[in-house]
Image (cartoon, rainbow over all chains, first blue to last red):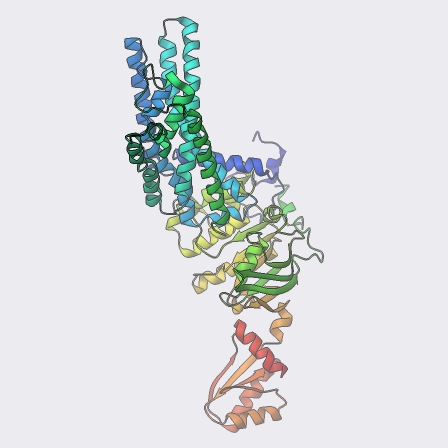
Length: 301
Length: 322
């Protein structure tokens, strides 16, 4: 037993059961930050199905598998033809459907399950403040989404870095391309996690929650379509605000420019409204988070 | 095992002295200004096992939630373990374990995983949480089953898991909301025995809620009875039940004669419909009543010790005082 002296106070696993009665706990009690960290890690593990049944692992890992496969394929093609097929940011955009699918599976897993089983009183009768519960879950989902996009981006980077013909200079240039890509993945993660988790937190039924998440993200795209064919240039340029995906892309076009839309402008023009898109994204995330916190102030009291 | 003996050596009794465990002062809670859940409740109890009895809707759960700082009282003061839960709920919850009335267990987790996780949520480090979880589950009587998903448990096992999660962080006070709910008679007895053991051997104070007085009076030191949000009585259990042990006598005919005969024997008789109620002084009371019935040759229908239900407790108290 390489454990410190406190091990003497515990029932040592000698293979014999001693009934030594109830023992008071004299050890350390961690503070709010560590409890928050524990809940966050627990949420992150739940997102990928760790510590859960095999069934709970299928969907998250299916998405992870597809996204990684695409990244590896892109890296392979690039090493053959010597030119990037898609930038890191374009990769994130191309994966948006899978991100939506992932949120629809994982967000209900994180919050709806707890609502359904009625376990929340057990959390809220502990020192942890209600807001911490909601924020830890949100942060876990943000991290999971960021890993979902950032991990494959890293694969693409490794593929490019090992096949570059320009030596260290090539690797450095590639890294400069990767970092904005990772930031863009972070933007996807924050927007989709905050909206998705808010929708999922409204119901304890996982199927409804998943449907609601998909609906919010996909049903808004026709609105974008309608707005973008209106005979008003301003309406066309602001159309992207109507849906989370196009909103994120709008911010991307504004901030990343040719990393997202190479050379000629893409099909979605945002004109000079870039800052409006950025502001809208910030407001959307802040609003969704505020509503999530409000939801958890009320629930299960 | 050198450290093992320490646990029972009253290391657990920082409140062994005459410290107030729970105190409320004019505590009132109204929902939406109309529904009154608690009305001007003033009570103070010392550590031990406290029974909180009242009919459904009497305000028991509301009181527990106020004690936990989950809801704020409309007016009045409250203190738990000397801390005000409205001002510092985290400090109270650190030292209190709560077992809710309703189903609250995720079916797909095992008891060991759930209780470990909730231990961590109470601030236990990873290893300590795992150890305390299996200890708590062992104390409530769950052994190998604890690795199976909770969804397959019986009601009795689920109640035990709920109790274990309240114990995992070693609280100084347990708040148990209807712990015997949904259990069969044997399960009720086992749960009550467990609660009694926690209150006596573990050195943890327990507030146990029930709508059945007969159930909690067996294990409690103190009893708080509330009805419609108002305090009916809060007292030491012995003081309470000695005044209320009553024999109910029913004869098919000649009730008047028997009442007169018993009065001659200096027994304070009270009428309650077709029943005669006689305070139970000792076993001799039975003999006197049986003697009187035999003497008058009356058909005895029933002679039993009245079951204590909350309403009867106070009904008979009025009768005996009259």
